[in-house]
Image (tube, rainbow, N blue to C red; front, side):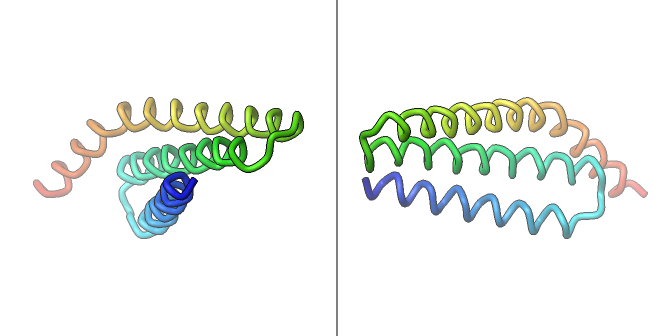
Length: 101
């Protein structure tokens, strides 16, 4: 499935982008907010990779490994979304405080 391959590559590119952005920022709340976005990207990469494996091979081992990948990706996405929602107002507040100084 070429669309899954493109989505896998895009999610990996976003993960690399957010990881480099994480190391370049200096503010702590913004760092955690960017890390949450990276976690969402990594989770989508893992889940899409597992879904892609379902289309490539049809064996019991593939189904088990793909289920583990999709489950772990979903956990990463869910945790990343929760962290994103938590750290977004803190990052905005931190940015406003630094602009006022």
